[in-house]
Image (cartoon, rainbow, N blue to C red; front, side, top):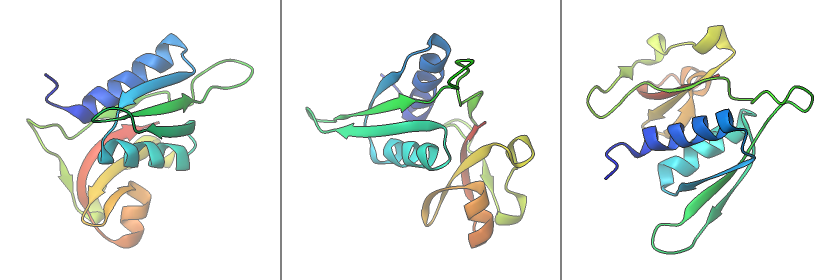
Length: 132
């Protein structure tokens, strides 16, 4: 029984990066697809594909590495808000990850977006995770 599917998603991606895998397969949900879409837009993953098989389906994510040194594009991926302790932030107090080099994924009333987009739209929300 998995009580925090977002933490499970982040852990699967983190473990696949540390193991040097090219592709990781994760059970699909709308929020996981949106997080993956943001990671691709920000250049942390190469590509993704939603496979509609069975009742739930899955997401296949092609992970991104440096060509020469084989260092993963994602250096760190951390869950911030969790079911036991939710972390909300207003538009003025949204965190900056690694002084703007990383991304905070925020769940807002207008859907999932990065911290930069939320600041631009002047809306706050639940800070789901940091990626750098």
